[in-house]
Image (cartoon, rainbow, N blue to C red; front, side, top):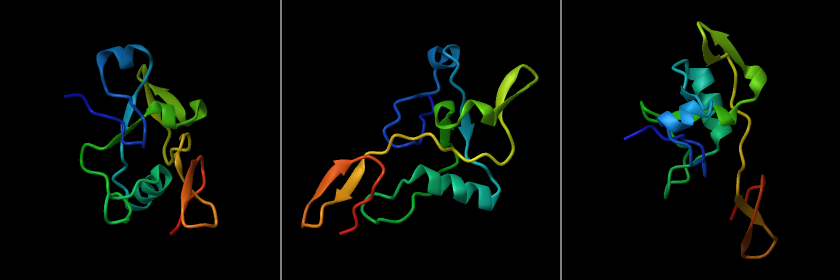
Length: 112
């Protein structure tokens, strides 16, 4: 089974077809501070606990979550520059309306 991008609502999988289209897949960094910054950028929470999602050993993000200037060619392969943080996401989250209910929106959070 191919790896899947860990970003919320991202359908990309690490398949031959996607690689042929130019997608690349990048594991979460091992360095603690950089890994934490990636985790915060992804904005995932553990279902049911409302705690920050902790990526497993196989967690990765596809190249669509990085800007083109965050890549470099190394030995003919596209790889991330050191220290970059993913920044391209399309979040659909809950927006607090001031009443007891929330509405779906983009880029704002609902805290009940």
